[in-house]
Length: 127
Image 1 (cartoon, rainbow, N blue to C red):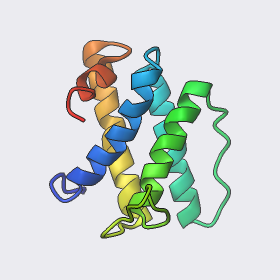
Image 2 (tube, one colour; image 1 turned 120 degrees about the horizontal axis):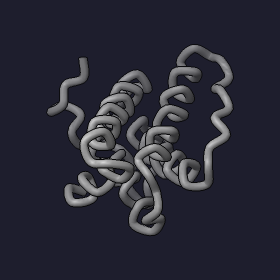
Image 3 (cartoon, rainbow, N blue to C red; image 1 turned 180 degrees about the horizontal axis):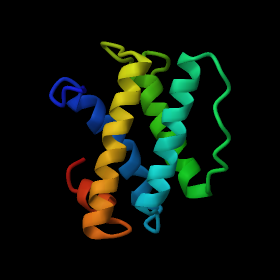
Image 4 (cartoon, rainbow, N blue to C red; image 1 turned 135 degrees about the horizontal axis):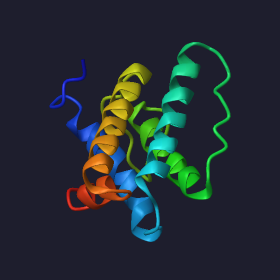
């Protein structure tokens, strides 16, 4: 089980990447975010299992979310720097998958509660 406190900064980093897309693609929907998260979860699990990830055929909006979140995940994995900054404590791809799943569950919860942009409207005020 994912300890919320231990990974709070990782969760915030991933949500920041999602909100950064929403700020200039205000028609982005929670569904498109969910699809991008599912593709990323599959990507990192496939990588762990040494197999090819599935082709998700993402929409343009989902692709933007996928790319921004993957960039942040790769930073947290210690694979890439963000600007001049390198991650201080890289985490494992298994931990990244757990963080992505936690955010996906949050997206689903807020979508059910508040509609097609429920998660995005909720999270934009916190990152």
